[in-house]
Image 1 (cartoon, one colour):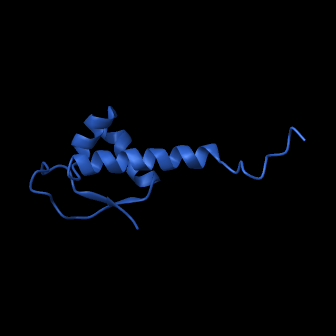
Image 2 (tube, helix red, strand yellow):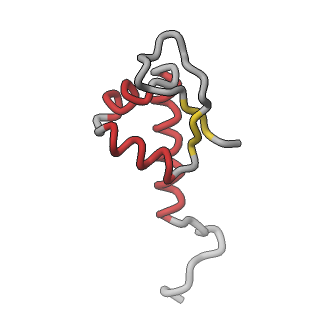
Length: 80
């Protein structure tokens, strides 16, 4: 039937997009050594937006400071 999903098609668009966003954010944070301000610039978004996304996607502040990070931006890691 056309309205029934095939058994091999169990994709949820929202979940897939969220997973992609999480991955890209993690890559940006890794590339910027956890510096949130620099990661926001790399992603082309504001600091306010990246902080909202960090909270939404369960990233947590590690409370360590990376020597290369500016003092206004804490190192951020993703919860396991």
